Length: 108
Image 1 (cartoon, rainbow, N blue to C red):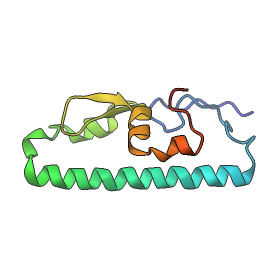
Image 2 (tube, rainbow, N blue to C red):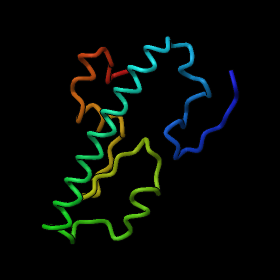
Image 3 (spheres, rainbow, N blue to C red):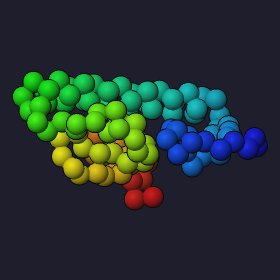
Image 4 (spheres, helix red, strand yellow):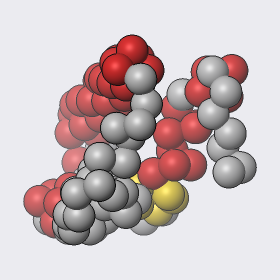
């Protein structure tokens, strides 16, 4: 296995290089499709929320949007319109309830 240190802000932070290489190519493809769908859902939710807040509640938006977006680990999920921060895993399971039906365990 190749050794590689990923940045804490990388989506690969905490994983080893080739972490999922042992999976069958078809399983890796299925996971890639699932991750792409999750990412697209999150992008659309973010775009909707951003446009809605920008139009209706500009005083709730972070003053330094760049730091809000890039200034913390991707393991954290800060709310756009509140000071609340939850883990990105908590946000994932809140947004994607079907993951449990696919066999993912949110308590693991």
